[in-house]
Length: 152
Image (tube, rainbow, N blue to C red; front, side, top):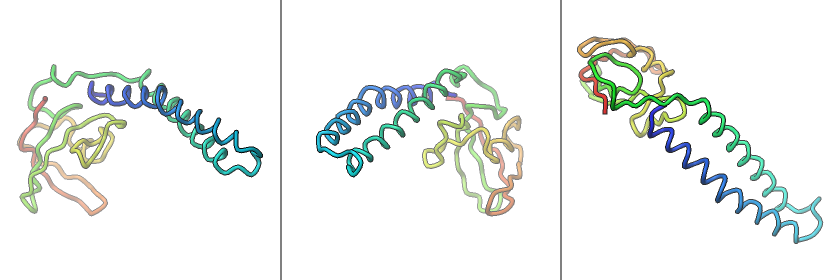
């Protein structure tokens, strides 16, 4: 996991523990004051929200406790590895796209971050700048040339 991904998970955990948990407890107390709990939809919704929040807190605590943080700024070279930002050129369309290879929890394709366990990242790991790689995607096989490898 990158330091940025670790920090984002810590922020989410603190939000859920310190803000969301208190808000849900207040909602449960308010719903409980309305009377009969067996037919109180607000109470049941708040309890469900509490269960979901506590489940996510447990998941975040587990991920953070087992996370191995790799400082990408200390890496260098022209070989693709975890943390690298890779610029690819589609050999069919000449379209250029950059992807950073990150951990599963911090992957976000819209932000240009792909999981190290994705088919594209698995095909790129260990390859050098200038190499062509073929990746099998849901849309079929695609060929890319590795135009650049950066570590930021």
